[in-house]
Length: 207
Image 1 (cartoon, rainbow, N blue to C red):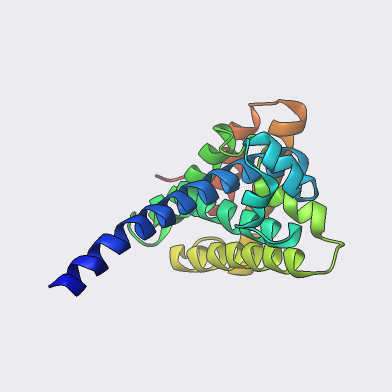
Image 2 (cartoon, one colour):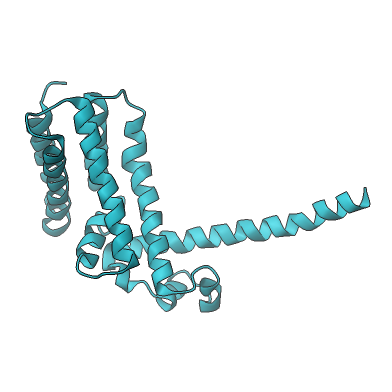
């Protein structure tokens, strides 16, 4: 009985410390994702983030021991945001054309709502790291490869278009990248309707 009581009482502070640690880590990554989308992953430094969220450098080092580790964790955190905003909602829709349409509508909404303050995190990261070998580039490439594979699978399941599914996935992705560029750089919100029109031409306009 005494041993059990000691075990329970000693686990309380440990659990609370772990919870505080998780909250601090999430706060750091939320700030890192926003900063990375606006200024690029190279802007992420221990000192910069420590100052932005008012935490000591040593405290931040306790969570991320290097700039590269911080960048990789930021990329994965941004992936979770993208999955939550674009992929997961559409996965609840019926398979085939309805699911493909739901994904594309969620993607346009993601651009329209500026989910990342600097625009699409992964378009920015792709441009920043496409010519830089290393773990960060590899991780970004893996995530973008997964995205293209998902588009290809959904196009195949929808049975749309005369072109191969991989070709349609390429064209869909290109439309999305152009939408983000035109909205962010030119401030042109007509691009959302233009993207919708382009998707309709690719996969059929019937609802």
